[in-house]
Image (cartoon, rainbow, N blue to C red; front, side):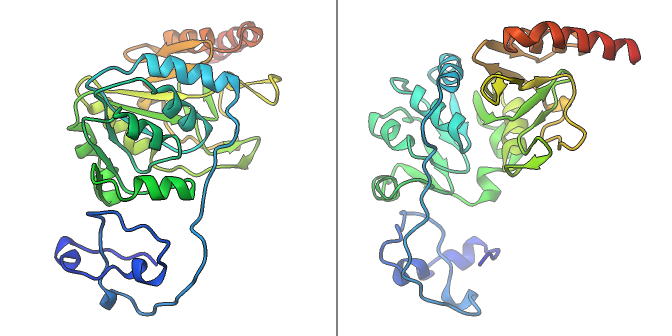
Length: 289
């Protein structure tokens, strides 16, 4: 059930879910929905949904290590969901004096929380992971729980200095366009909040918007850096929102680059065996323009 509510409706309201399912964590300061807002309530003694990113491949670990090396004290970090996000969260081990502002918290976050990595403050709206994550993170008073209108609000994000958004992509073309939804003509993911955080980070003073992806797919037989997004694909982030792209082969900082320099920077971080082909494709595309 989804409903819109304001602070006046939340003040003094009864925690419905906590009473229906004792296993449901009730984070301190989280929104409360008055019973009067519901047309119907149904009790359901079912386990909470869980999520595990699974084994993290070596190429993503290299990508994550590079991104972690770009993050320093005073930065505020956002990650999404999936293997790339989990790899980056693991790679932040040992960091200090960071903030966290994101739509959700994922499994590796609990260890970084206990290490004191995010000492500059934590704002989020959702947890998805294991029962252990829920038990350890949900009651923590250091976490500020907010609705999407705060966590994903462009002006709010832009007002945070040195905001670093980190989101995964499926393919990036030589114009700098990214899809995070379609692969091989099939939708395998949703749009999510990547555009909100990407644009907020680019507007933040000292901010950076990072797209993370391995250089290849299908056991190394296909490049994820492509001449153009496939015709059946969806542009999740247009070229005007491009910022920084990271693969296991390096970093393409696309800020302030022209069209040819953008293509050159992206070819440089593609898998070596695909670079000549990409360069030839780009040359042919430019001749046709």
